[in-house]
Image 1 (cartoon, rainbow, N blue to C red):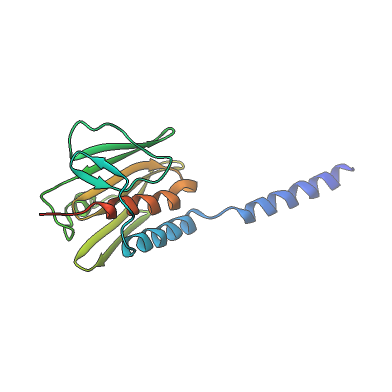
Image 2: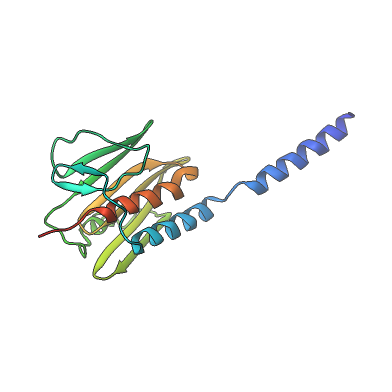
Length: 171
């Protein structure tokens, strides 16, 4: 094949591949849609216990042995997710969201809140390095956070919201 033919083929291939990738903004939008759907859906069936707290964790994820009833780590491969529960807060609490918003200089790729039936939920995403995003998902007195990548963002938002919504608030 002549050199010019290879160059045209290469440019065509690059164009096709570029068209197949999803822009980060689209991934954030899809992730927020997934999180909203998970927030508004019925809670997932409980399959794990952290101290006295029952919760849902998807297959393939592992709840590490916790030092107390209110802090835990969930892992999958090299990915780690930090779970915090404030038992003094109710489903309508905005405390974890307000703590996310303390720094007015912070730039957010996503900052979305959800409300339904006296429940409050949120998702925040900030870029901490190239293709490294801090993702925080919460509802009431429950917060789940991780460092993720663009291509995992939508999936992580979805299961993380399902997990925080599965935690039952009892007096």
